[in-house]
Amino acid sequence: MKIFSLLLIAFITWLDCSQAHIANMVCFYDATNTQKDSMALSDLEPALHYCNYLVYGYAKIEPANLLQEPSKVLVDASTGRDHYRTITNLKSKYPNIRILLSVGGDKDIDLNYLETNKYLQILEDGNNRQAFVDSAVQLLRTYGFDGLDLSWQFPKNHPRKVVSGFKKVWSTVKGWFTSTKKVDEKAEEHKTQFTQLTHALRSAFNLHGYLLTLTMLPNVDPELFIDIPSVIEYVNFVNLCTFDFQTPERDPKIADYSAPLYEMYERDPTHNIEYNVQFWLNRTTQAHKINVGISTFGRAWMMSKDSGITGYPPIDDTSGAAPLKNSTANLGLLSWPQICTLIHADKDLTGEKAPLKKVGDPTKRFGTYAYRSADDNGNYGIWVSYEEPATAAIKAGYVHARELGGVALFDLTRDDYRGECAGERYPILRSIKYKL
Image 1 (spheres, rainbow, N blue to C red):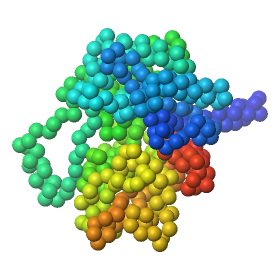
Image 2 (image 1 turned 90 degrees about the vertical axis):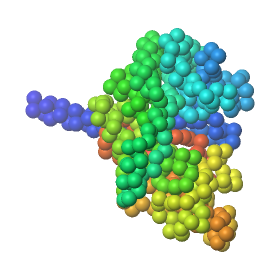
Image 3 (image 1 turned 180 degrees about the vertical axis):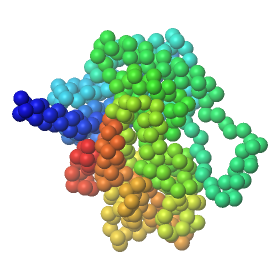
Image 4 (image 1 turned 45 degrees about the horizontal axis):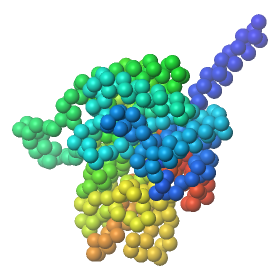
């Protein structure tokens, strides 16, 4: 009997330990990037050995009938639909991976509807919400997806500069006499309506065994739009996009860390992973449903003559996004292999081809950056805050220590999927998976 008890205790201990090390590896695949970067399906497949979930993005909402359609960035509708099937057919080769379709993702931009937010219009009308639910079920069933990810395009917070000393006092005084522009005048209504939408999706998806997930896009305030205790019950997990806190688009004149792990001195206290994770943990006990988002890219600003030569952030007097040649379509956004190549460029090169100086983070709290000061004419200056395999592993270690659900990687197309710089494919993805 004593031996049986000891064996039972050993088994339970082993089971607890094994379960503690099981974590989600959610891999986002942004198909809207593949035409620019020429990523083929054969380039994608090696990543699937490390992913539990593949989230394919991004579907859009068609204003006329609310049906989700393939993104117009793809060649045409028929090609997009064929691509849907090509992706979901991967399940026969990789049966352990679940493939979801993501809608929105800051990619659903229609120039004819810039004055309105289609995503809010769906929320505001019960018939629209039901039409969305019906179209989602139909689309998932038609193309064989395992579920839907709501990368919902809520209004974003306004950028704000954190000041200290006399400037802080003066800013406070000015606030007494000026009103702050609200992000969304109907935020409370939209919060309730989004809860209703997720509830309706959950009810419909239960009939088919579909997954439902939520992705909080960068700079969207969950306090405004998400009833966390309710919504967390309806979704399988939540992906927090804990990066892009600082970008050249939002803050063209100040360069700074874009995805710090912890709060920095005299910075916006919400601009770090720890704050955002704790915000959710304060409102739910289901830590296993929270995935921390890690990017595979960096944000790049142009340094001017007035930006100094030390590179120590924050960098004032920057001149917006760095328009580098051979960069991604988005100004100021560089993939990890592009950054890696710039850092390891020949030291004898000059001008726009000159290498960047890398500055690591021995504290393991804020991240890595690289820079090249502007020359005497104010040219060729650049400052980049970025993710690399080592910093991604640190964040994965944080996820493991906090016993969170896992990591959501944004995205596979900007990792070094060909092994051009590090010599191995998907170095950031690998570093996260091994740490988890």
